[in-house]
Length: 300
Image (cartoon, rainbow, N blue to C red; front, side, top):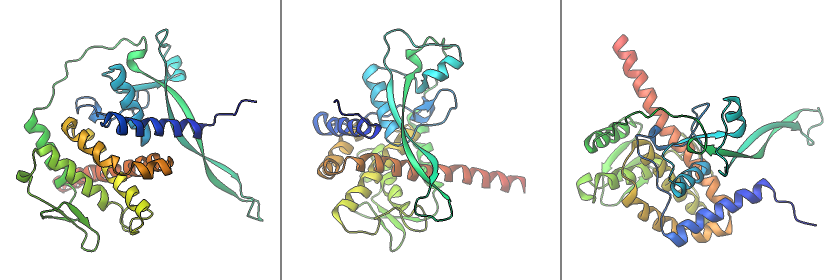
């Protein structure tokens, strides 16, 4: 009797493929430029961004197939639009944890508890469908505009102090980030990638996202936190439209150092991707809070 392949098995396979991509090809998945919805893949119907490991999965498919759209649809979403998939096109599988209520066997009062069920979905890129897309001229921001946007993004993160230091780091005891001058980096993209890495670290403390194992010195916990910071930095780079190409090799080399930990626990990568996305959203949400505060001041 053939062994049943579960969604967890499928997700583990995706993780194995991502590890192989880093280990063998020596490169991470290239994020889109800022002209494509901030670089993040989105659901074509709801407009919501995909999260965690799904981001890398969809980036990978888009790169392999040469898609320029970041919009993805399920078959049912296309059917609702009275659209269809081009014959012969294959879907990309993504995963979500769906909360469901079940009876709590440990409770005597018949109460329920929430568990998370791993669900798999198949999605198609816009360019795999017969949806007619009106071509709109995309105005790429200039390099100076991208750098100014990056500077503004980090200036809005005023919840801690950034000081000059010879070695990049985040120090929980003082809640400060140390980083060399931007002029000491090969490029401004490298500088903001490093700064993003340290800011992602800063979200892990108890007063913010309180990541498990953040204060631990165990090797596996340290590896996990470094994965969160590096993956979170990649999300930040994609949002800001910074040039990730020369940084990818550095990220891949950095992540290679933790491959042994990844292989011991395949779930570590998708867990780290999920935590990295939460950290990225923490930083991203502060941009809107700052903008709302500025509007409130203008109104007052």
